[in-house]
Length: 371
Image (cartoon, rainbow, N blue to C red; front, side, top):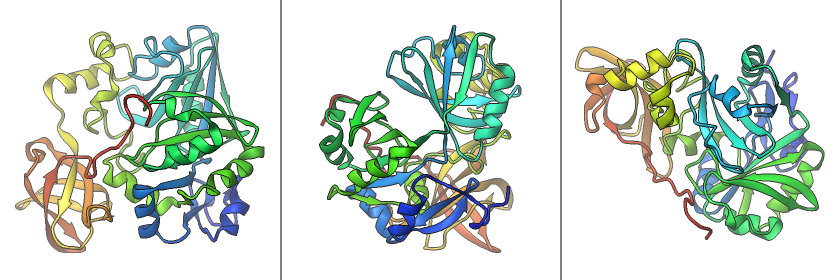
């Protein structure tokens, strides 16, 4: 579809974004706020306090029926049979060659499974899954739900005032709560590297929930610009840029998403290729790049080792917390070791870079107990 602002779909919070001064841009077929106060300020606020993101463009799917975990395991490399109730797991939807169709979050809700997929890929994901889903399992796209992300070290303080005992959740755990007398589903998870929560709420009530959160002194609205810089500092890939069907989980440095049992048993799409790379190595690997100077390297910039082209940048920009430009990209495995000196061609100019571990900014997830 056309992605001009005039023809883009609107999110349930569109009017609120505009009321708050959001600068709207087309993204994944929707009109979405790229910034409110400014990207740098919003980035810093999220790192120091709590930022509220509207991520209602993402797809929220429910799977019901018999042997749901096994049905999902036929499509992804996660161990869902062992996934306990109200626990969630990062996973990957793979094609028959082990290429990444999408990355997503899977939650066991007891009587059904709940999956959140990327907004730009959700319709393709649904079609792919529906064509391969085992008999006896149904898939429902919950278009009646909105999704908010509250991220930052003070997110728990703000959310606890309006949603009760959310501090009892640990990283990658979820549960049912109430905000403004509205039933919501809350997970302790996110896409910034910070502690935080994602909140699924009926679209008809999302404005009331959003306003209740924004009324907390720790919370400000945050746009797509800061969301991108925050996830880049956290070393988190963005589908369509750092991930695609051209890369496998091993090449994308996401081998952790393949559980121990699945590594032993296989049985997921592209398992032969993926497990072969796990055993013998992959030809390329997604790595972090620290860049000398102040000139950022953007997506598509070529990476060199001497005169040899060895890779390509997939995401890059200035990192406010780091105070310097950073990037990530795919590089030939002979040049991926931390500290390897490289160069990046930025508009015809070679700039020095070094292979660096990710994340660039330490993650601050709450893994054990409340706070």
